[in-house]
Image (cartoon, rainbow, N blue to C red; front, side, top):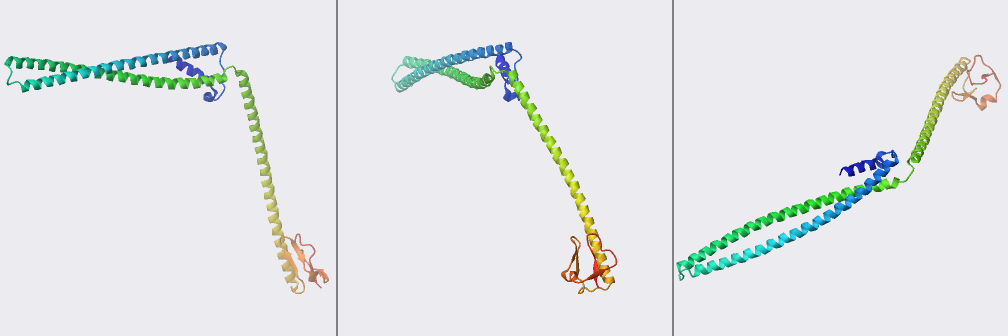
Length: 283
């Protein structure tokens, strides 16, 4: 059992599915020693299997003999009991016509037969106990066999995994794994650099968008002020809307109507604001 646990420990150390990394043997002697222990364990398992088969056959033969002896003695006791019962019936039926000596003889024979019957019952109980003991031992042997079979299957699975990695260059596998880890680390680092660059570009675009929004709000404010100044100038010079039609768009500047552009205009005092162009009034 100690060898099996030690072998399982060695297999786990060389098994990449349980350790997460490729474990390499410390020396060639260690690998050879492990192989020797595997072969020795195979021999021990085969010997235990043969011992189990022999013991099982022995217990089956012993159980068969005990069962046959019990059945034979039980039949003999039953036959004796029938004979005694028949003799007792005869003695009871002819007691009035027989002598006292014959009755005493029959009584003594009855007592002897009853003693033999009690001995047979005692022997039967002993045989039952022995049969129960043998049955329990057979069950224990079966349980032990099942446990050993399961343990042997697990050991064979571990051995198959070990055989899979046997004969491979562990140092080469380790170098390959290290190269793959380095490549993965380089890819991850490159992705982090791209993310940082994109974050910087996003921040620059957000700042530019904020600047444009502030410029747009300022321009809209200036256009609104220019429109208000233009309206004030037109009211100051009493220019009717029917004479001059000037439409001012705070967002697109001042647009002159077709009616105002077809007539001559004169300069009007005051400035109309940014983005308004030339301002005029009807002469």
